[in-house]
Length: 189
Image 1 (cartoon, rainbow, N blue to C red):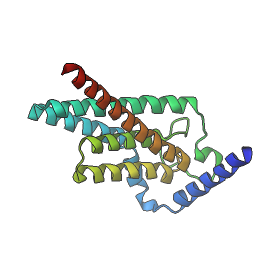
Image 2 (cartoon, rainbow, N blue to C red):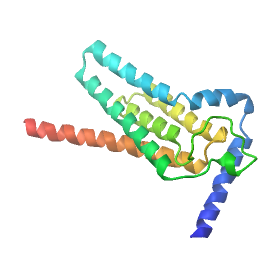
Image 3 (cartoon, helix red, strand yellow):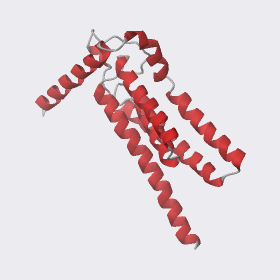
Image 4 (cartoon, helix red, strand yellow):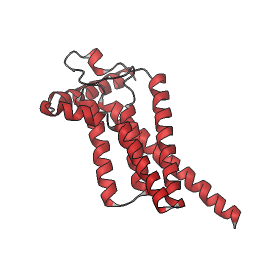
């Protein structure tokens, strides 16, 4: 089992080195900004949905606001819990050739930025299934994920775990909401 983890770790750092050392360094500042748009974009999307629901006096859109808000809160809470339960050194700590180009908290695993970005992207695109929304939010989420590796603060495994966790949070949260809504329809009829 130890040899499996050693081999996995070697692939993880090799892929990180490939990404980090072959990044277009003129874009470091752009990726730094993209990396830290995560909460701002999440909150901006929530404000846009809430504002639209108020403007149109739409209960349906207001309900979508609460679903996205729940996804954001669950992703933040679960991300924080996992980062404080599973400790993994940041790549720049263990590998001198990986340069820290961004702020980074304590634990590397999983990528909290990636969890939030993909949770919000999936929730928003599921609730507003139009290509004009889906493509931009997933491009943004993918750029957030890539930026965390390019900036040297996360391993690829941290980012992949963040994508999986974010997608599962979003899918599960919306599925629970739909289950409750269907159950309420049955009870009220």
